[in-house]
Structures are given as C-alpha cells and as structure tokens.
Length: 362
Length: 243
Image: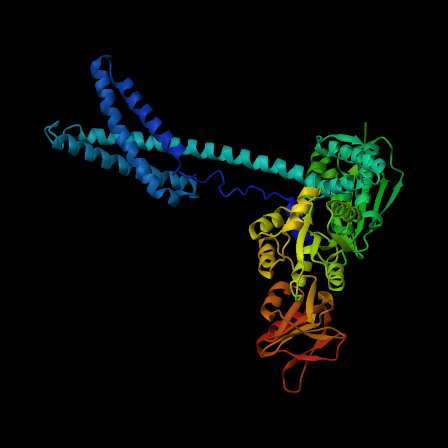
C-alpha cells in the first residue's frame, strides 16, 4: 500500500534556505544594478558637496564631470558583476567582500587610467601623467574600498530578510496544512454530496459537524481549551469519518479520573486521532479499532491514541505524519516547556501516540 | 458502456452510481472495494471503463491499473481522487483521465465520453513523478490471458535463467515479465541478492549452509529448495546471516 506516496501530497516542501546569513547573495540582479548606479550618483554628489565652496555654473560643470567618472566606474563594476556573479554566489560573506572589493578597485584603476588616457588623447590635459594622477587614484580607491563592504552588507541583509519572510510564510502554510488534510475535507464533502438526496437529515448533521471541526481547525491553535471541548471536537470529527468509513472504523473511549475542568491546548487529541485513521484504519482492508485513553497520574494528564498497523508494511513515518506530530510537539512545548511530552511507539502490531501534560485548571 | 466502480468508501461508490444513473446510457456492472478486488471483478465482468479511487487499502488504484495493463484487452481507467497534488500533476502531464471529488455530473459525463485505455508507459511516468515511488504490493502473473496476483509477502524468491524470470511461493511457480534488475530496484528492501540470477526474500531465509563443494547455500522456510550463493555474493550473504 502506498501510504507514503499519498501522504506526501499533503505537505508543502519547506523553503530550503540554500543561503545562510553569512553568504553572498546573487549580485547579478537588476535590483543590485540599480542600487549601484544610485549609490554611484550619490557618491558623485557628495564629492562635489564636500569639495566646492561656491555654488555657480562651475559647480554644475564639476558635478557632470565627476558623475561621468563615477558612473563609468559603476558601469565597469556592473559589467564585471554580470560576468562574474555566478562565481560569487554562495561564497562566504567575508571572503566574498574582500574579493569583490579588490575587483571593484581593479575596475576603478582601469577606468581611471582609461579616463586619463582619453583626456590626454583629446588634448584636455597636457600630460598623461599629471601631478594629481596619484592622488586621484588613491582617493578613488579609498572610496571604492569603503563603499563596497557597506553595499554588500546591505544587499546581504536585504536578501536574507526576504528569504526569511518567504520561509516564515511557508512554515505557516505548512502548519495550517498539517492541521487540515485536504484529503479529509474533499472526501467528506463527497460523502455528504452522496447523502443529500438519500439521507438529507444525516447529510445536514454531517455538514454541521464538518463546519464545527473546520471552525476549530482554522482558529488559533495556540490557546488552551477545556478538555471537554477538545473531546467534543474529536467526537464530531469521528462522526464525519464514520460516515465515510462505516464499520471499518471502530472507536473505544477509556477515561479514568480526568478532571472535567482541566485545560489542554486546542487540537491536541484530534490530530492524533486523524493520524490514527489515516495511517492505521484507512490502509487496512477491514479497518480496525482506535482506542482513545485518557487518565490522570498525580498532577499529569495522559492521553494515548492507539491504532492497528497496516497489514502491508508501509513506510509508516512519512512526512505527512511527521509534520503533524512535529507541529503538535512544538505547541506542547510552547505551552508547557519540558513538562510535556509526546511519544510515539509501536508495540504488538499497534501504533501508540502518547501525550503527557501537566493538569492546568481554568 | 459497462462501468466498474472502485472505491473503498461506500458513500463514494453510491454517489458515482447515482450520477451514472442520472447521466443515463451506461450500466454499472459492479463495485469493487480495493485494487485487487477491482482486478478480480474486471476479469469476471469485463467492464469497458473503471472509475477508480487512488488511495485504497490492500492495493491502491495506480497499482491495480498497472496490473490491468497486462490483460489482452485492458479496460479504460478514469481515476477519482479527493486530493493528491503529485498524482494530479503527473496525470495532467501524461494525459491520464481523472476526476476530483466531490464529483460533478457534467465532469463525469465528459470523462466517460472520452474515456480511453491507459498505456503502461503513462503509468510508469505517473509513478516516476511520485515523490516517494513505492513498491507494488503484488506481483502479477498472466495465465491464459487472465491476471493472477501474488502478494509480495508470499514470494520466497525470484530466479532468472537465460530468458525468463520465475517467481516462487510456497505452492506455486510462475513466469513473470519483470526483469531481475527492476525487481531488485523495486523490492530491494525485502530481498537479498544471493547470486547474479537470484533474489531471495529475507524473511524466508532459515539459514545458510556450507556445501561439500565449499560453496554456501541458502536454506528456506516453506520450501525444500536450496539456493546456491555465488562466490561474489558470499561475503554479503554471510554478513547478512550473522546479524
């Protein structure tokens, strides 16, 4: 039986974070190119703003000249990134910064030399090696060396903020999907559709149960609810499943000494029962018995759900199951820390899922 | 058209039956509750089309369809499913007919009108597209145009000679169409390769025994056959036996 094949359909694969926070992002994107051009222009304006004491036509002339020079360097850098970006991707941030900075400085030198050569060639300057040649180079290199790390830092932070937002979204979706198995939803609707004519009364009741179950599934799963509310939800859920599975689903409740007003996290019992049905009852030809046991032990509440294992061994611990269990485990931990635990084990052809939580009263 | 309905849920079967009656012009010749049941009924009732759920106990719909391809005149298959992201994508790509539950009358009507047979190639592609392709639960054997199913847990060993592969259980032996290599790929977890030409189910192995010739043999439960271990596989088999 291909339970694992089926179950995997319920999961969204987590957004795998290929790039940690200390890794260079992709530098070949349009967004990076635009940022470089803007920053280059800002540098040109700052140079003029910090240098000129007067404000006249000469200032504009100087600004144009400096802008042309800085933008030429920026274009050189863009060209260099376009060619080499694939090599940088995934490189450690520290190492990458040094390499990119050196390359940008090399571009700066090349553009500066080319500019000086051009100025001389067209007769603007008298000598190819004017007095201010060296000072220009040093200043240009200094600015490059200072700006590159800042920009890389910005790109990397920006990139990871976006990745994080995406993976958070995927995680939320995953949590929601682990609660609502589409398989259950659509099969139940199909069952209700088939009863509408023949048995409208029960169809209506099933719709109400389904609505109640989904109201809870869609609600905030972080709150505590009275244990009676949780068992009522499980009962309604089982009514719907019973409709589909008929006699294949047998259920036995065994409770002893459970305080009626104990509070437990919402959706503690229902996911365990759903797992038991999906992995234990549905794959079995004759179905089977699900046992729900709840008992008190000192100040702890125990809940155990038992289902028979499928006749044909499947890869039982597939992803769908794992996500639901991980989700529940996380919620238990956020409520009770180390005091709560969730165990799953196989014994004598049965699968047991057992929760232990401290008894909390309203 | 003669239709066979295959679904493990009674209400789902009832719904299909009701819709088919409403559409008219077709006859529901039977209902099956899982894949292997569907194969038996198909051979007996000779339906033109199967409306078959995917997720079912004992044998799922995809596997049943694969076995049915071995028939001389396989029926058309329309899969019905509640939700199965990966299978649906694969169906789209390979032009396999399917219906989503809850099933609408118009969709069912349209699907029945264009229902056509599947090919083994389509099914292989579908299976390949699954995230975790799973092994079949049965081996199918064709006997005089009929398909007989052998649960994989009954198989004691597969043996290849120059042309054919045979499957052996405690009371039967048959020729099958699969190759030993593909069987090893599919069922590798259950079987141990003891010779270039033999795969043995590990839970039928009783022990190993050294022959006067110096070679090792595998002793099996439920059969008196002794299978020779090739020199190349001796180390691996002995390692397995020591566990």
